[in-house]
Length: 262
Image (cartoon, rainbow, N blue to C red):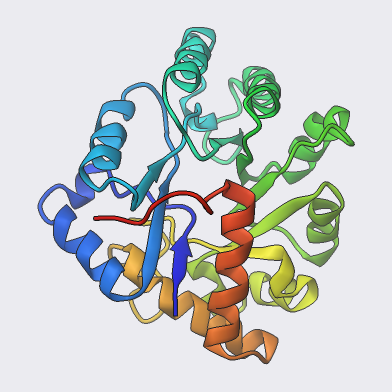
């Protein structure tokens, strides 16, 4: 079986002491690619170094994370624009709106999301969306992009089945991570509702580790645990889940021609 971890932050300090071993464990688990969303200009050097060191395995994205939208956000967006012109990325991500921690820069987050949606269209890349306490606000912000060809994924999807239907109507995928293994979560119901054709798998490592590792550092090799849980929820085999979600990721992120090499 082959898997693709469509969202992880393996370049962060949590992996500084054993990054090569973490990548090796992922490869041994059948994970072909590790897609890395960016946070802001401060994390770019570490992310690009990981992309270079693990060429063809760790694949970078470029964007400004909503929690990094501050008074200097326009300057940060210019850096994203420049990076997209100068380097090859698999997506614009992760962008979005986050109203959980701080609502101070909500208007700026909306502006930043709109601009990054425009950049995704300009560079013919998918948009990776981070949403926390902000699904309706994101739907409203992206309403002007309907029928524009904008595509992407709602990473770590936090909504219910009705909201998932709106995501599918926009032509986006649902990002499914470790939360699907937790008890009393909405995500299992969403997965059952949308089916395998509309989801891609992710770990969000080092965050949101699946059961039985909940509360510990997450890593890309754990994508198998997420996939096996999705198989149970959908009445599928792990092989079917791996095959369909991997193909979904290949199509969305344009990975068909990327050589897999360590």
